[in-house]
Image (cartoon, rainbow, N blue to C red; front, side, top):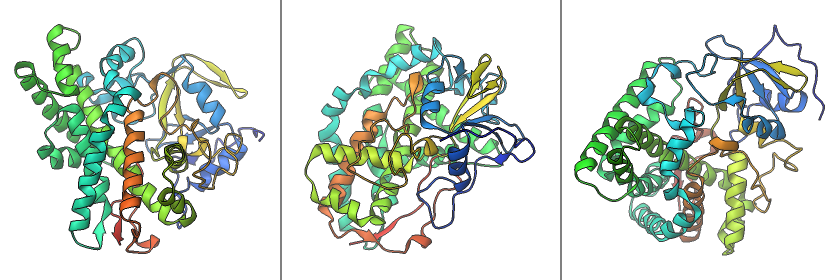
Length: 406
C-alpha cells in the first residue's frame, strides 16, 4: 500500500466513525478506507480536537513502542476529553509513563503469569461448567450474556482478586457506566468514584484482616509502604473492571461470530486439539478487536513519522481494529479463519503498556468457548442477526443480549 498526501484539513473524519449496517463484526468502512490510503491522518473528536490517527499494523507497533509516545493522561493534548480531571487517586497505572507505570504494574504481575494461569485452569473449568449447568437448567431460550458470558469472567476475577461475588451486581453496573460513551462526563466519573470507594473500603478491611487473592496482596504492599492505599484501590478498580468487562463481551461476541460462520463453528465443535483451540482464540481476538475507541497517547516530543511531524503535545490514536485488518500483516484479513496464525495481533496492544491480563483472557476464552460448544452442540441463535442490539455506544464492543436456544 502507498500513502497519499495529507490534504483533508477541511474534511476531517469524525472519530469514532460508525460501523456499516449489516456488518457488525467489521470496523467502520471509513476507517478501513483510511487504512488503504493513509498511514497517518488527522481526525476530529467530539470536543473539536484533532489528534493524529495511525492506521497500519507495523506503524502502530512502531509508535506504541516509541518512548516519545506518552500514555500519561495528565499531559496536555491527551486525546480523551474529561479523563484528565478524575483526580490523581483515580488514574490507573495504564495511564502513566515509566517509572511510575512500571513501579505499580510490577506489583500485580505475578498473579497473571502464564504459569499462574495454568494453575487456575481447573478453577476456570469448574466455573464454566457450573454456569453451563445453570444455563441448561433454566429457561430455553435464554440470554447467553446474562446466563453465561457475564457471570463466568465475573466469578473468575472475583476469585482471583478476593472480591465478594455477592457484590457483582454493584460492580457490573458501575463498570458498564465507566466504559459506556456518554455525552455527560459526570456519569463515568461518578461510577468510577463509587467503584474506587468500594475497593478502598475492601483494601482497608484487608489491612486488618488479610485474605486470599490479589487485593489482599496489595493491602500487604500498603502495610509494607510500597503502595499508598489509594494506589492499591485504583489498581483494584482497573483489574476488576478490565477483568470481566472485556472478556464477557468477547465470549458473547465470539459466540455470535461463530454462529454467523458455521464452517468455523464446526472447527471448534469438532476439535480436541488444544493448539487449534488456542489458534481459534487468537483469530477471534484479531477479527473482533473489541476495544473500539482506539488506544490513546500523546507525543512527549516532536516525532518525524510517515513524512510528517507529530508535534509535542499532539494526541495520537491507535485503532487496533483496523491494524488487525491490515492486509500487509494478515492475508485476507476480512475473513474469519480459525486455522490462521494470528498471534501477532494488536488486540492487547503492544509495547510496555500491553494488556497485563491477556493470559487470563486467553484462558477464559479457551475454556468457555470449548465447553459451551461441546456440551451444547445444538446451541444456536434464537433471533436473527438484525434483532441483536450491539454496543455501539461503549468503549468495549459487544452485544447487550444474545438470545440463544438449543
